[in-house]
Length: 272
Image 1 (tube, rainbow, N blue to C red):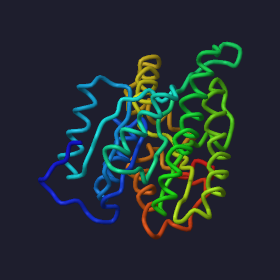
Image 2: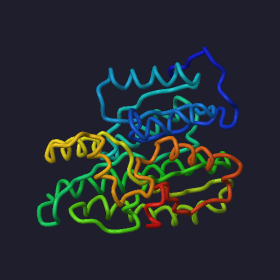
Image 3: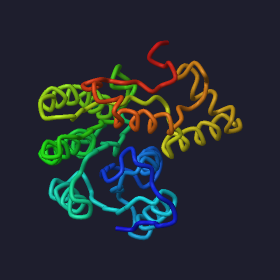
């Protein structure tokens, strides 16, 4: 566990442990930053090199003063999920917050999506959240407090062509959220909610915008506007800090009565 002594962490979530899948960069790392700033110890997870994992760990520890470990488990594999939970509990005593953020996406028509791609989407996007909730809920019950978050999507509300694995798993996460919330309701201050972001500036989406710019011979600012057209009334990306800030609020005392909810953070996309 790396912990910086250069600053004292705030106390709202001091001493609690948050495990965030897919968190060495992007949205997952932004969530880790916000929770660490609230005093959480953090378990970063991802499939990157040991050097990249250590770099993300060290950066977060220095900036927050919280305890941080990097666990490079492949959450498509149950044995590695079990090891991830064991490593986190060994490092920090328990796991109080789980954010199921890791995701795989495949873009292909139904008849061209391979069985292997379908199985991977189910494993990472759906089975891993189930197993993590199953494994950490006893710890949360023992402590009388816990927060489970499933990162669903705008596409948890609607269909879309050429992404059946993503749409199916993100929709199913909403049902899983409701079921877990009901089961956890009498276990203490334990909640489970689904967060549904709109379009975020992820590396995957930025790559598609770059491809669009090249194909249409336009600059990236114009390509961004074309890509976002119809996706958000404000015509800009959803801020990662907006998603992270909602999760932090739901971990606060003000969030204790919000459970089983499906909460869009999409700049009004679902309202259009």
